[in-house]
Length: 262
Image (cartoon, rainbow, N blue to C red):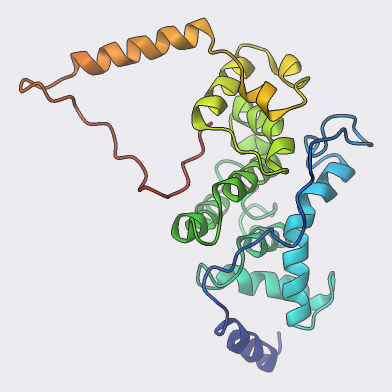
């Protein structure tokens, strides 16, 4: 890459606001609807279904195209990959999180050769890139990324590399993605109930739910209730001699996006 181009790029990004928001150039759909290609709720076929992939990726792509335009580069041109590498090498918070994600789709891992962050579970380079990705959210929340945007980001990342997560985790995010696209966010408890029903073999029935209220309103399974009661009883038994319960690991700081609940 020409040295003058690199210097011009660095001078421009130095003037950018820290942690610019992402995924806000496209209006969210008013409601979920069937995909005309795969027939499932639109977005749920991501990334295999082309229509679902375009529906989801437009929130990322428009931010990336804006960056390309600012750098006077063409999409698919010779300089796009070099720009992606510069974005990933930059300090966290220089670019919208959508641009970081899109850059990862354009760069191949130097160790395994797969899409960066989506390689085999034992690829150290992909693991490092995936961990660095989420530092953006934890520093920028809630001013530059909302809980709904964080969940949408997690869902896309999970579905792009399903082999890196447990099957139940992948299925739960696949079920939720159409509703995340319209800005509906389930609580951690609701996600845990959805996951429990997936573990119990209820994915097909869950996939028939056409509203977030219907999907998130699932009853707690009896075996989940029993496990919760047992956990609470054990916590009471684990009190120290002074009568103070042993403390669980500290909760995330108030206002931070919750860790992936599934």
